[in-house]
Length: 112
Length: 114
Image (cartoon, rainbow over all chains, first blue to last red):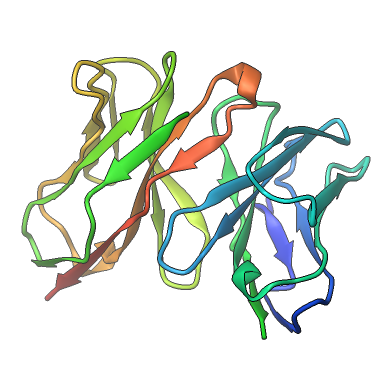
């Protein structure tokens, strides 16, 4: 049984570009949350998707947007990339909003 | 808002030593509390959790007790191994109405030497 799958594992982008990160949740999970983990820090909540809608959002600008598809997979989009967006982006899936998140291995984004 | 504070690392120990990582929290209501572990180059793995006051979470020799009176959830292990070297994160889960989003501490790096 596959856990949470994220792609790509690494990528490098230039300032001002746009990026899309992808997440496939664990089988049976219908809720996807995204977190940003800067180097040496704890993860910060970006937003959560359930039933194809954004249900909760953290303190991130509108440059960060997302989408959830009918098969529960999700995308995170970041526009107008800044150097400060360089981080590990983690996807976590769950069943509804019940405790018990499964995290993926993350996508390491470097903005140069 | 919710917040989690945990001791800064790195914490360097010898194999078979006793490990304690302090964690305190600020939250409204009655959050669930978690410890996650992150090995190099990997995502987060749930180590243990506790959902109400005085609950003790345990896994792989690690333990933590939910202390509401001191708003703490300290992680302990009696005898660490080299394989326990990792970064440990304390976290709390907000209310179900808030989507149970996780609030993390800054992480504590633990290095166990043979």
